[in-house]
Image (cartoon, rainbow, N blue to C red; front, side, top):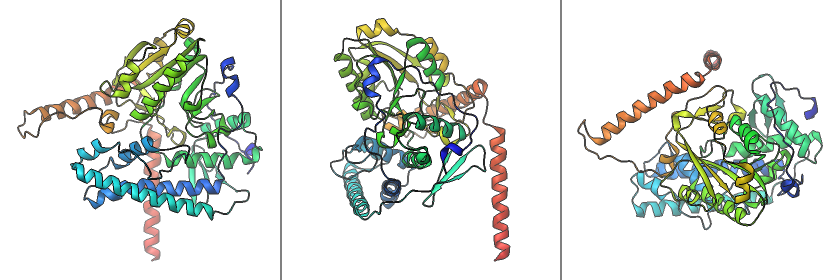
Length: 466
C-alpha cells in the first residue's frame, strides 16, 4: 500500500527549528550505516527473541525464576552490545560480567555466578553462529507487501511474515512527515521502512532503562536556551526534526544522524537523556568532555539522568571541569514519558527516582545559552494522562543502592520500619499523582473489560462446537 494514500488523525506537533550552522556538516540524508532488508531484520528479530530467553532459562535450571530476569539481561545486553558487529545481537565473545551484584542478590555464590555466566556466553555464542548460518542462506526478498489494518482508529496494525506491530495514528503520521523529509526512497517504501523500524524497537521493548523527557521540557529548553537537538532519541520518540539515535541503519530514513558517540558538533546547545545504564552514562560524559575541550565556539549540554549519587557514572558528571550547574527534581514532583508511548493510548508515568539535571558548558557556551531552570521544572510536571507503574526504582535494579536492614523478625526491626515507610511513600505518591494529572482513562478500562468478555464468549462457542 502506498503510504501517501493512508489517512491519519490527531497528528503530533513536530518542532523542526532552523538548523544551526554547526550542524550543517552532519545533516546529510544518507544513512550512517546501510539499512537492512526486511527479511534480514525479521531474522535478527527472531534471533534476539531467543537470546532474551536464555538467562531466564538458565536461572530456572537453578530453581530461580526472578521477575527481574529480563531487566538483568537488559543491563547485560546494553553493557556488551558491539554496534560495529551487530546493532542488537550479542555474540557471546569477550563480554564482561556486569551483573554479578544482581545475581548475588539472588543468593548466587561467586562460583555459581562464574559458571552461570560461562553457560550464558556459550549459549549466546551458539545462538549467534546459528544466526550467521541462517543469514548466509537467506533469500533476498522481493518487494514486501505490508498489511495495514486501520479498523481500530486508536491503534494501527502492520503485519508481515506472521508478525504484527502496533502504532498509534499520531506517531504514524509523524513518521510519514519525517520519511518525506529525510528519506531518499520512494514513498511506496514507507510501510516497509516503518515495519522494519518497529521490529527493531519492539525487540528491545521492556528494558526500562530509558524514560523519555516530556515534550514540554524540551519546548522550554528550546525557547529559553535555544536547544535544537536531542543526543539520545529515536524516530518514535523525539521532539526536534534532527536527533541522534542508537540505530542509524533503520532510523536514518526518519531523520536520525546516527549514534551520539559518532556525532561531533563544535557549537550549539544540546539535550542529553541517555539510557539509564551506568556504562552508557559514563561513555556519554567522556564524549561530552572531549567535545567541550575540542572547541572554542559556544557549546553546551543539558544532561538528564537518575540521581544515583553513589554511582561512579553520576560522580563522573558531577566532577566534570565543565559542570556549571546542577539541580534535583524530586521523584514525586515529575513525570517521564514511556518509551513505548508510540503503541499506547496513555503515555506518561510518574518517575520512580529523583532526577538530576546537569549543565555542562565551555565558557563561551555558558555566556551564550545561560542556565535557565524554571522552564525545565515546569515541563517535568507533565502534560497528559498518566499510567502509574508498580516497579522497583532504577537504583535498585542497577544495584547502585544497597538494601539496608537485617533479618531480625522482631516487629520493630529496621527492616519492618523500612517496609512501612516504603508503603507510606507509595500511597502518598499515588495520591499526589492522581491529584496532579488524573487517573488512568475509564474508556481504556471499559475497552479491556469488553475485550475480555468477547474472548470468553468465543471460548464458550468453541467448547460447544467440540
